[in-house]
Image (cartoon, each protein chain N blue to C red):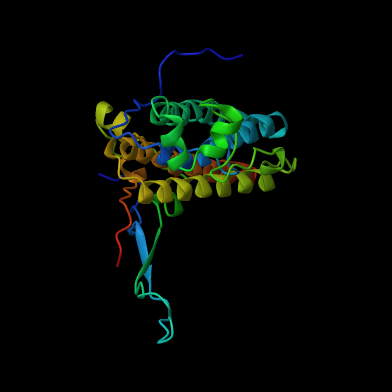
Length: 77
Length: 189
């Protein structure tokens, strides 16, 4: 599927846990997340990567499966 | 020269009458990291960037104009049938006082678009790093808009636009790789 070396594995999100003070005025959001899309990992795009079928590509906004990054509404933690 | 195609890059549907969302979306119309700023930034930098990557800047700058049209269409659809009273309730009274329902290049807080939002340093690496940052900031803006919107059709189009920012960032990163490549070096991809 990926003839030109290994596609680096990565996750689309990272989590971190900010300090929660006993004196915070609002109920704490214990987990914060941020987006880490595939363009941070791919490097120079190698030839021959797998593609989406054309209608799916037009819908998703990219032809390349390796470049697709999903984003869903942030849910309260 | 440009050729205009009389359709949107991606269909824009709106499922709910929600003028307040238009107020937020205008950030991507006339904001610092919006589509107008993006288009003008790349199309202007393209003149003085090495010709190996000039085409990329023109292509992406052109696509940003297509995105600008999509945002304009969303804002227009969300506001065209709202009464002045509804616009006031949605926080758009200030806008109505000046512009009626006309669109204007300002951000979500009503600050007019400024040329200082874009840079052209003339140094190819500095300019491309600015472009990468601009794409990541626009991606983030789309995330915050998706977080605030409960309109599934708008979110569908916003997700498409967010993905395009990811792809553009990738291409600008590749442009840096092309420009920093040593002569006679072996291509190993």
